[in-house]
Image 1 (cartoon, rainbow, N blue to C red):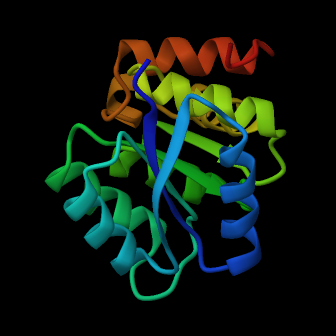
Image 2 (cartoon, one colour):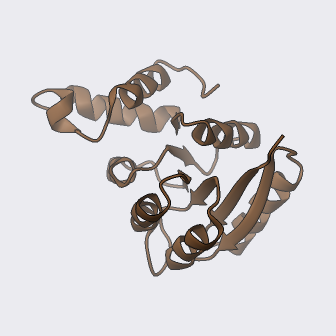
Image 3 (cartoon, rainbow, N blue to C red):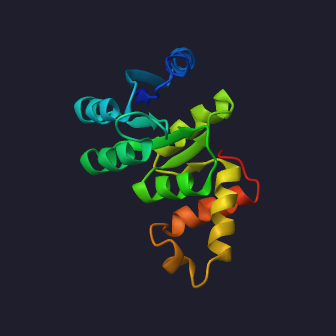
Length: 171
């Protein structure tokens, strides 16, 4: 079985090292690089072509959102998973518009994070239930149709958000 190659980008060394330790115990994952800012994350993604890039949303030099855009443009085969401490609507929506494949909070249990990595690698979305619920609430409250409110969301993304808002797990 081929291991899923991952890069981690977070400006907090303890958090990066913690994720590295978690991934060391997972046979299906292999961390091939770490970055301390968004600029370094983009460079690593372009050089190493990981299967999954895990980004913090709030990093120096280039934000996680801008790094996600650049990674998705230059490495479309790399899935991007935003791992953030923030559940603000504007962060979640701007991340989705940037093309991320998933958005989880940093308090996500290890097993859910690992499942999310597998999901985004497989081409599925992986969104925190609360984040998905906030987006659906915004869409439902917007004037006009879902398509005009958020044209970046396709049918599959809307289906995933709907299921997450109903309390379904990522699995």
